[in-house]
Length: 113
Length: 115
Image 1: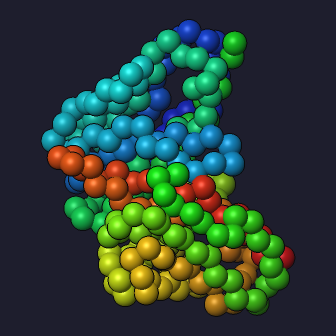
Image 2: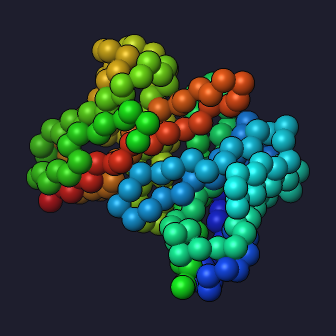
């Protein structure tokens, strides 16, 4: 059974720092991996999707990498801002077609002004 | 929320009563999903649909049923609600960007409390 783990569960850093969020998964047979952001009381917003054949994806200050063989992904946030404060979740897609995502429990990020 | 509307957004009910949550999309996406989110468990897939009247079970389907009689609507029913079904329920759709992999897009959530 695929399991996804995100460490740490919570992270607090001062504004302006670069930071890395970690995601690990137990079965390397994934179709793709997505990173989401969730603000309190809101739904999830997709940030980046990395297909299994790709190594990384970038969007603005965000860069996500994928190493299938080691079962790891990282989300790098450059020059963090208070508006980046949210919970970040990673999820792996285990089959093609229907997106039956398996989610990690998330990292709650706080950026202090 | 990418054209996804969930209703009701908040509901309090009593144990043993039936509850139906509705997910409505304004576009014509084939795949729709229901997830629940709980502290300590993250998001877990309940059921999903891959077309009108075509549905399948997810990881935590016991105690839930679904129906999809129209492309735009996906209903989640708790036949007899229990306190363990107190949760936040999210509907999602697979959005197919041109030339890329599907991206899962979520609604705003429905908070259900079973007393």
